[in-house]
Each structure stands twice: as structure tokens, then as C-alpha cells.
Length: 386
Image (cartoon, rainbow, N blue to C red; front, side):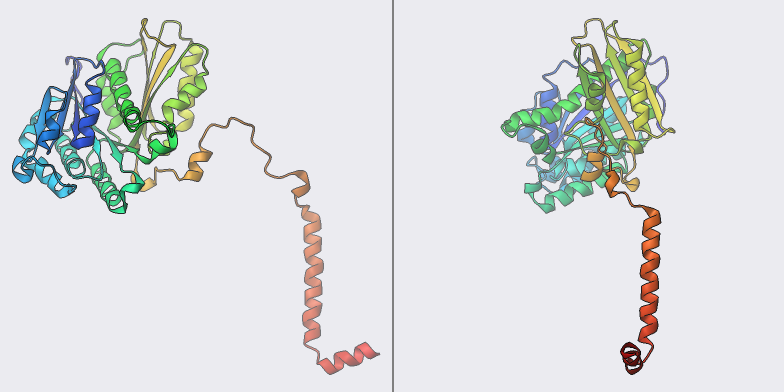
């Protein structure tokens, strides 16, 4: 369990580490967005040349001796050794933060090796760490996929929450004509939206308040997690907005009913109706177990450019309980837009009385047939002739 932050503490500090090539690209995108002053972006890499073009103010080159500044060479062990070599620098930044986000790619060297090590440091300090990682495309080969899975499995042991963004989902969810740059922009925007929503939520008082300790209580349920942000414009259906927040197509398919906790932040103008706020809570409760810890907050933002904005983080979906959905279950979990078809037509239903009567006749005929077989063939022929 994490140490709760004293109630008289100042604005909580959020550290966002981008690890490896993929993570540093995300940090570059985040640096272009309007984040709050209490969010620090930190680029971490073994590749000195790649790190130099990072646009954030804090850059950490790890493993100078282990990698000579030339990268980890797609070897997770090298990434781990690099993080271990530079753990003093990493510890300083992790210890100063109240909440840590780590983002990067799984399957390569630096991210796969260094991110679990950083999560283990956060666990030592009792700091909540949320990891948002990508898994490789299928065409990158089975070996890279196996390295990625091994990295995620190790990460789950230390991180408070692990959110996986499969690159293959980009192909399924986005327009086939979309450029590679824009596709990864959409993937990175999930983290960007959640960071903006989270900092707004825990950094200012709301009408129904969510503070840092609330967030820590929810992410203390270790395991896989899902997160999403959705905006609703005037006249749009609230139910669809809730579904978008809960089921982002770019996320790994997870079974929300296995979640042990969820935090929902509603940001809205003063025109929000009580029935809308109530509907959000009711819909979420239907998705989760009755025993799940659910915290729902409301912040009034008069200058909001939409009717309302939802941020959802669901946590504690344990790997042992198979929180992942297969394709069949994922489809079954989608909201029904059409009335369900009756499973059987009346003509297909079985009349039980006729069925039992038919079975009795067949059984009797089979018994008589068995009895006749016990009579010698010659005797049976004689009976037939008479």
C-alpha cells in the first residue's frame, strides 16, 4: 500500500518518463501540449544522439558505460544494465514525484529492460507508478513479440497499473489511409488526454472533489488497467460518450468487470444536469463488480469548450484472472445498437412430450430387435414361414 500524501501538501508533482525511442517520441509530443506546471517531462534513453533531439527540458542518458551512448541494440538485458548503472539519477527524480507515469515501447532494448527496473524503484519508495506501453506490430516477428510479453509480465510485478497499447490496434481502429506519423499521434494522445485530465482533477478543488489520495487509493490495486477520455458536444448522446471513455479502440481489450477500482473525473460547464451525472455513475457501476472501489468527481469548468469531458481509469485487472478479452467476448461486451434476435423461432422449439414419446417407441423397437438377435437364425426363419 502506498503512503498517503498529507492533506496540507502543496500541488502534487507528476513526473512523466519517456523511456527509449518510443517513449522519447511520446515525450516530444507531450511537450507541445499545454500541461500544468506541476507536470515534469523527462526523456530517458541509452541512445545519446536520439536523446539530443528530445524537446523536453530534462534528459537522462542512462548506461553510459554499458552502452557507450549507442543504444541497447534491441537487447532488454542491456537496457536493464543501463538503468541499473544510472539508478542514482533515476531515484532522485522518482523520489521527488508524487505520481509517476512511464511510457515506452516493449519489444526493444531500452524500454523493455529499463521500465520494469524503474517501476521496482518506485515500489521501493511506495510511489504510485502507472506504465503506458506499446506492444509491437505482428509483422515485426514473434521474437520481438515474445520479448514484449516478457517485459510486460515483469512490469506487472512492480507497477501500480499497466496499460498496453498494441500497435496492431492502430491498423484495425484507424483509417487505412492515415499516415504513420498521425497514427502514432493518435496513440500518444491517449496518454496526453489522461495527463491533462488528471492534473486538472487532482490539482484544483472540484464541486465533488477527487484529490491525490483518491487517485492513489484506486491505483493501489496492482495489475492491468484501462484508461480513456471522451468529450461530449451539445446534443450528443451521453451513453455513447461513456462507451468511448470506457472502450478506446486503441487500447488492449480488457475485461472491465474484473477491475477492482475505478476513478472517474467529470469536467463540465454549469449547465450539467443531475440526471447526466447520475447516469454516468450508474453506467460505470454496471460495468464493475459490486465490491469495486469507485470514486466519481465533478469539476465545474465554465470555459470548457464542450458540454462535458469524462476521464476514466479502471485498475486492478489481475493477469491470473485473465482480464484480457478474446475476440468473441470483446464483441459480446460491445453495447447493443440493435434489438437482440430471438435465439429460436417457435417452429424450432422442441415439444418435450412428443420427444419422450418418440424415444420410448425407439427404445422399445431396439429392445425387441435385441431379443430377436438372441434367437437362432433357423428358428426365426421358421417363425416367419409359419
